[in-house]
Length: 113
Length: 112
Image (cartoon, rainbow over all chains, first blue to last red; front, top):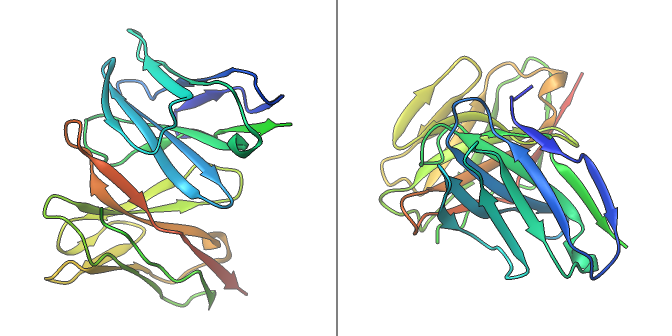
């Protein structure tokens, strides 16, 4: 158990819909990272938040957004969903701002039908 | 952006040492090299990280030559439970300009 909790574990939704994925980081970790893993694109870094503020951006689509709340949990919002958004979405956390030892959650498997 | 290249797959037998090499010709001065292990339907797990020369921890060693254009993850005496995908990650998150590039991953199959 990494200490990072993601909910829900599975999500099935229709195209055009909007979903929210939730992540609770390890106790004491200030950084939260979001990743997308799909068969054709592999593991891709989406975005990082540190202590409530956006810190770094990767290959995140404009239809996607994230935020980190004062209690440090984070949410990834995916809107106008397309079939190609079906993937595993991982959240990771680390103590600092550099990607040193990051701890990953079990992921949320999103299926868009 | 530091693009990484790893072998797609490797086979080994229990008890052998396994070396997985990652090429990152365009690595930047501030980039670190990190290796993660991933089992099916689980999130990646940190194995080891280094900047140059050699780093060793309780599960692996990481060798980085002076030019830093490649790195080698060494797993001593693998067991069946080491069957997984291994990712080489190059980059560092610094301010708003950090970028992380995952390699395509190496699927290691350990046979009895």
